Length: 276
Image (cartoon, rainbow, N blue to C red):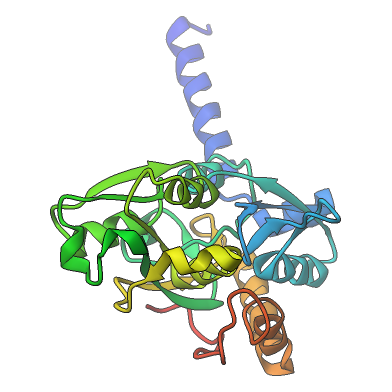
């Protein structure tokens, strides 16, 4: 005779079985079966990922890397724009397959996501309004500093200047615009993106200064769900092949090198490790 207790136990066992099956599901196989891979991107962080004003398409350094991963898998790349603060939740909840979203690899995040090989290394820097008279980080104490919500920049500036007043925005474009509007005396971002922002100022650049000290080391990497070893292996292999073929150097020069808005003289890193 099947009792209520048997039904409850059976339902519980079935639920546990299904949960275990989902936990053991192979994301790589699922992506190949669907024929597409969804990348979570910012779309507001030039030159990593941004919307080209002419084509209205997403372009950038991380977009090119994501396309290389999709080609390696033989699937269609799909890009979903997300905010900085929503990056890890979007990945954990399965709304995206991989984060290609200017994600800094640090120890705190290793408990939440897995990281592919580091594909870019930069640092955080501070841009100030020249009229502020600020020439060093200590002078930011008690001042209003602008940055993006959910990134590492806020942590970095608070460590560097404990008494700073931080105001955050949804994306870097909003924070940079707020600086130009005089809503703060300084703006914090990854150095590479900050140089790109500075390059957009044109003649107005004389009204702003980038302070010399770097306030943090930022190794950027693609983010993956915990435990997806098959997908990580393919992503890492793609990155190794970009490095060994010289394509990684070409991508750096295309988006960051001499003549670009960022105008970095040379690449100071190689794509070779997922350790920090």
